[in-house]
Image (cartoon, rainbow, N blue to C red; front, side):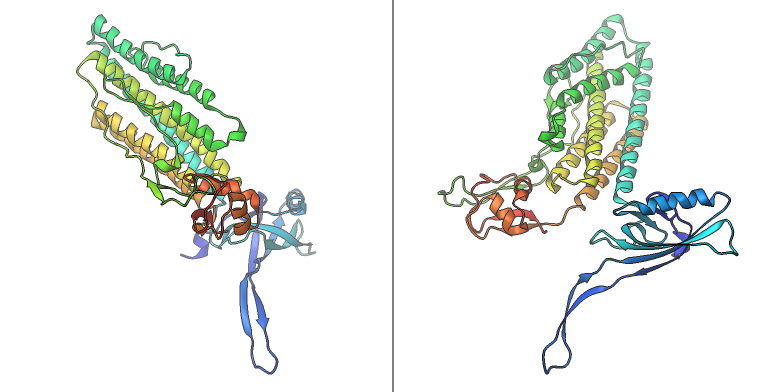
Length: 451
């Protein structure tokens, strides 16, 4: 495919550039080791130097002075900025030289020549034309769109079911159905410790079932919020713990969604408890088995249908709330990554499990033609969140096995590995199964970033 088919709109710090040509140069940093009375040299390659990007652009038209002023203001700002290269996409670069030329034969125009120097290490050309922040925003928008569709499809399905059932129910059966539905919300409010919202008759007002569920979930979300000192993962974990899965059956059981790294990947438990204890063998905590089989609802009775509809709608509202909160946290990680890969896996894994349960539950209570579009949007939402999580994980260096060279604690280990003892907390998060962070045995293997 020719570059003319994928050409991008060039900008620098958001200001449009009408590019005439580009010239991109790169040099290797080489060290020559030469010896007396020997021909040639040993050459050591220390890596590629920062790329130099030469851009020639033109500003023209009746408003060219205004456009030129905006461009020069963007170029005068200190520090790195985002350059959208017309061929190679997003590049973080600093301005080295600027030249503005006016010619007598070209009135109402100016030629601008820029020399920019790449300011981010380890960034390949052809990065897809979009910055990490833009890609994260795209995945977040895709998730938000799928969640809006899920809400609309659930409202339509419940409304259709309520209209069909309302004409055939007796007053006693209607009371049993509404009472069973209110029982689900009462149980959820009691478990979370929040006030039970007012629940109208959803047989005549189909939207009230989702409205009540979202009102309850919003109260739980406000309760689960924690100060920043505890970290974003702690807030998400608290929210997930307060929003369990309620069975569709009449048994009335609930299953919590524990957001812990060990739930989705085996966690090694290793290391001595004290400085005197002998190293113990590594014990691997297996992942907790998750059952994707939806509980069988009792759709033969009015009370069974009421509980099934209320539980399915509440579980959907919970899945949407957790996914939306997870999206906000993962998007914020693009600018300042702080979650470990295992924590990101736990965040994404919990939401994916919730959406899988939503699919199973809606298949169990609705006909295929009604459940299918709901399942498709749930899949879309889960995939968008998974792509966002993968993007965050790729921001970190690879996680490798690091061996302790001597008895130490995590602060000393961080100093040995990175020359920065303040990264001890990072090592602790990467090794949640460590028995005691103050005693690391010699030869003990820990997870750590490669750099």
